[in-house]
Image (cartoon, rainbow, N blue to C red; front, side, top):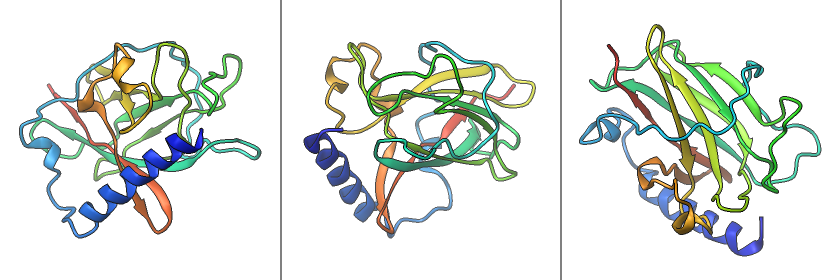
Length: 187
């Protein structure tokens, strides 16, 4: 990531961190007036992903961050046991097409929580930086979507960019933390 992009992301994180540091973590605001997380294109999905919460490995270049949040129903109830698949590019905008680097899946805990230790994905021609995600509650349809980053250089030129899918960045204890709550329609 170039110095300008890092500065923009960290500045946004500090502003958002200051605004949310004193906020309450009780009822998620996402359920108010935003009933369901929008779906998006899937890109190439790799079925064989390891069960893990950390995709960072020795020698991996890039800005590390933690992605965390909840999986909720449209009635704002936590969804336990939802499977979440993540896949992304490295910091140079390249996917691992042969192995399982920067790919994982996990299951939400009884409170609907998830967290992922990763790096900021790199952009590539025609696309801004983004994370691919599939979320599936037990016995429910799969939500396929992407998450985006505020202030990323090519957000305004990416044909798939959707501001409703922006993560909320914050600086917490000198670490970069992104937050996003997925809201699913449960049948």
